[in-house]
Length: 111
Image (cartoon, one colour):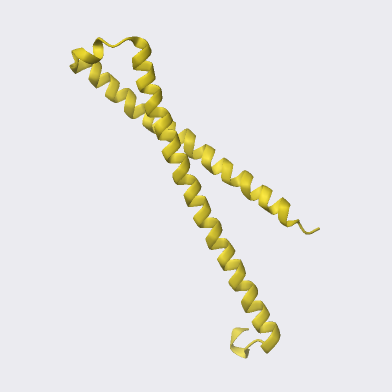
């Protein structure tokens, strides 16, 4: 049973959202570790950072994690879109060559 165009677009959108989600999780983890290390360094070496309230320190940590998740999700989504453009271009060229071979015949060297 052939899939409809709308169903294929839905599956592609779901795949794109999962790619962005995986990117967001990995970005939050990576940037969260980086901001935690920077927070530890700030606590060890900066009296200004030690004087901040715990709420503001949590805000700084969360800001780094949110920024990292947004950047990585966007990068993964752009990568997915480029991959899909390449697949579509390849499918279009394959269809063109199949049409060409159907119209003019296949060369003997190709078999």
